[in-house]
Amino acid sequence: MNKKSTVKVKNKNLNLPEGVFSAAKKSGEVYYRASLTYKSKHISLGSFPTAQAAHAAYLEGLRLLRNPAVDVNSYREASPLAFEKWVSLLNFRDNGLYSANPIYMSRKLFYYYLSPSHVLKFDPDDLFYYASHKIMSRGGHYFVADHGSQVSIVTRYGIRPYAREGRDFRFINGDRNDFRRENLEIVNIYHGVTREQKNGQYLYTVRIHIKGNYLVGRYDSEIEAAIAYNKAADVLKKNGAAKNFPQNYIEDISPRKYAEIYTSLHISQRILKYRP
Image 1: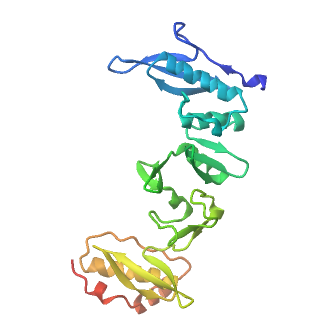
Image 2: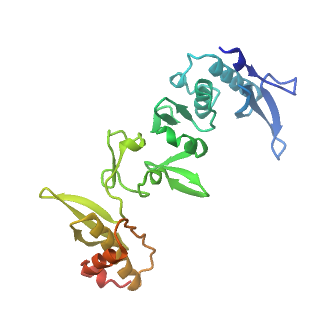
Image 3: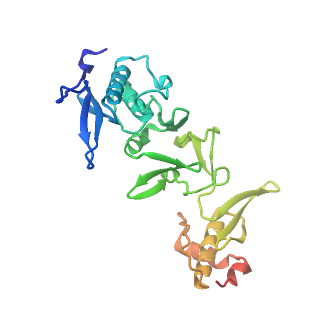
């Protein structure tokens, strides 16, 4: 081990084990914190109910940092350290970057460990974003807290929130945990538009949700379908629908061309006659 990478601990309370500090809650209840310093960085290892548990976590932290044979696969549930902290320490030891989030860097990608068996893959360009944004999982969707809101991580890759895999986007290599950009293919980029194959040709079906899904129509091009959705949203609002429909933004066509397509498109009579 490099002599410059020694672990240092300063403990002001000599009655406690090395690496352990006492603290108190507002109620007066005493608890214990474990910490160490590695490569000049002070690292908190967490809070514990007893000094013995805190010291065990401290010793475990030392073991991880000093023993290069220890890796993520060495983790056991009986470890006194939380799994996230385990990953963070190993990444700092091997790659020199400390993040409170469970990230481990590789040469061409990095891994984000939601659990020992649930691992997401990302491009190196996303490293600093996920180092400061904790990923949460719910119902098969992944979110981060951003500016006080929960934001789906797929939006970072140009995919609409709650887009459906297989219909709106797909993982090219079949790995649903691989969020590298080269592995993501966006199939439908517009709200309400689904590409469908019929008799060897693609058609674009448009549906809009207002107390159930309403079929707007089927169109030959994706641009026409996107504009048809916008037209349906406008008609529904005009007819009194109390809902804020998202708008499809179409690039690379002029306002005049947009207006021509908008005027010429036919949409369902059910939409035209809708009344709340």
